[in-house]
Length: 204
Image (cartoon, rainbow, N blue to C red; front, side, top):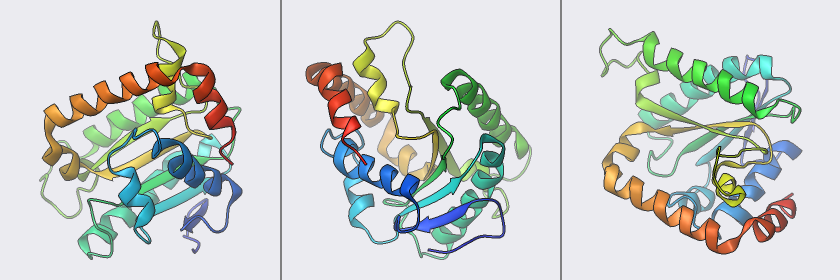
């Protein structure tokens, strides 16, 4: 583990932070047993593949994501990280950040990521945003109008944004993505909200 020159603490292997450790346990003891992500097991089992960056407040998240994205990008290009297993987590320790505010902030961030280099060369080394995919997670996640158990697909112990290599997702294809979504929905429906809540509450 080590520190960057930006706000937050970089925790490689989840050794320095309780918040990062809870996120690691959520992946290992909740996401993997329920098979909610087909890449999760390989990420947990591969040394250094999961990289976690924690900040104290929402105001620090964007700066942390920029730093984490560049470290992720550099790791892939230097072959220190395998794009098939690498994933970065940017985690806010402040759980009072309400879901609606978090989601609105994420949508604005995602739009900025896509618009920032829209007119530049997508293959440029400097154009890192288009090479990565961001995804939001939140402890209070819920889908409007859906059964409460379905929200557990996006529930993490803390407000979190993950970073993965877009080419890996593209290589899997839309059919695979739709299959994963359908399998997750079936698993969550079968497990039920009460059992899911019990499982997630034991994480950490």
